[in-house]
Length: 615
Image (cartoon, rainbow, N blue to C red):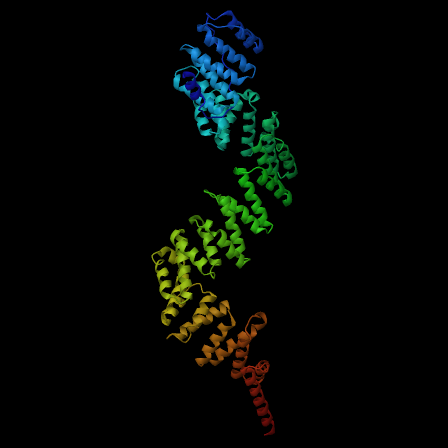
């Protein structure tokens, strides 16, 4: 029962690391038999087979059981029979008496787990050692082994803590730097590596893991030449392929794309599945940068089909969607992005890509933009995207419900600026459809934001003018428009509906005339101004604007025929002689009332001229 309990406890552990230093020599008690002593001598001289031959034929006494199993464990360890060594370490620990030997056996058992790659078990074993023997002289060694185990398992923060308790030896400091490097804490790792290289560069000959990490650290801080020196000195295949990938990244930064591709292809030969996946990702990036989009897509599709899951997989899907988008395959891009977004924790970069696609589509395909928003817009409803959502709302202005949904959401959850802007857009929407009460309600929600109104006062005035116009409060509507500082064509259009409806028509007319002369506008604005001046008896001023409309016709082909004919008709009425006749001649072609009237006027003019010659 005790054996089962002890074994269970020792199997419950996590962690990951590189092998620890050679074990310390063991002091053998003087009462050990000559057989065990002889076996230990063979073990010390690296002759495990001979040691096991002696031990296998020997029956130890009760007092020798711990030493016997310890010797067997060491012989099995040298013979690379790690599982057998673990069992003998266990028995040696059970039969040992309290004292340094008991501490050492437990420590070496933990180290045996570490060498086997059973990192969870080694973590637990090291922690049991530290709990049971907190004052042991082997504590720094145990913390070093614990740090290695945690490092191998990817628990880098915990590994750093353990290495910190392992002392200031070269292994402890170098490995702490390796853990910092693995966490992306580049500067901290660099600040350890550089002094340590000066203090003990010899250690690097025994640790290609450290050699690689230093090379990668130097690459990341931009010291490419130094990084190449360390990376090129790596020989072990497991780290050589990682070094190849780092060298590829360096030469890609140096714009040597073809050389980078060669390095990435070398890294692809690794037996490490994760390393191959990342090499494919870098290959795709290199091909894309060199304009070989088809090759880039093929590498990314290989990741998608052969290496699912993980951050590199997600990066590949995102890159592939970007290539599809640039190639005009928007639907395929969206399909890929949905894979990244339809998760409990959606990929932020994928949502950013959705945002880019929607904004691009907004300006070139109104129908496609609306469909795209309906399909994926939900994921963009985040306060941090308020400015983009305002642009999207502008594109949805004439879509009805989608526009209202976005603006209402922004008015509740957007940034302060977006809340105000969306409320203004809602107020304008309702004013445009004649719902003055709703428009006024949304406008009221803005008026408390004095700072915002100060910098957006013209927009507020425009909405107020529309609300007053709906409520037939023409004087207030005109006052709002006349208070606008930065006048736009839309203001002239709005004011054109008020000409003749206010008591201060002269002031409104002056504003209208100045704005139209500066900004120009649709033909109906010139007609409206000229007609108003005509009705006020200012016929010479009216004639000027009728003439202006005719003069801009060659450069403004969208002017309606009816506006042209009306302007020509009024010119014929207000001018004399050749100008009047020419205007009538231009109108008479057609079958509408003005054409027929101009024909009559021309005949009258011709008859009058003849009679004048007769009499």
